[in-house]
Image: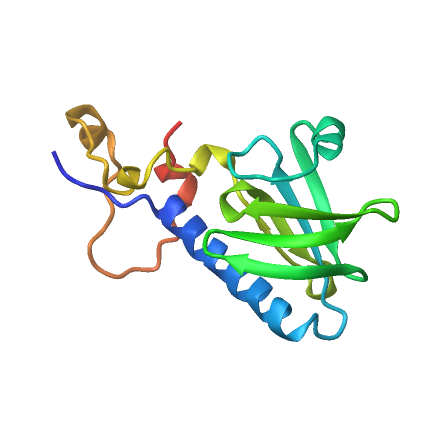
Length: 158
């Protein structure tokens, strides 16, 4: 049995770090220029803290906009907290980065989309072992350089 790298999960971890860095900068310095964010998150995710009436309206997924009016933006390890306005009612929210499904900054046509099927079940999943069947079915990848383009879909578990 051999270990394998879960590149999709590692990439998601790195991209969540990017979101953390961007939001930390905004918390410290404000939004620069025309930048603004549409952030969609899973309201059922553990650690999501939103008012009950918002959870009732958005039982699965919710999108917030950080643009004109928001305050108290704070990045706290694996999550961020922010107060946003819902119908002239300021509401504090706590959103774990793992709950985020999309993060979009339309001012620069930048967006991230996280597929929940690529999420690790635990930190140990990053080092899970292949069984003999999976190892035999793994595609052969050339070890030396070349000009071939390989679709990443070949390597996804189905």
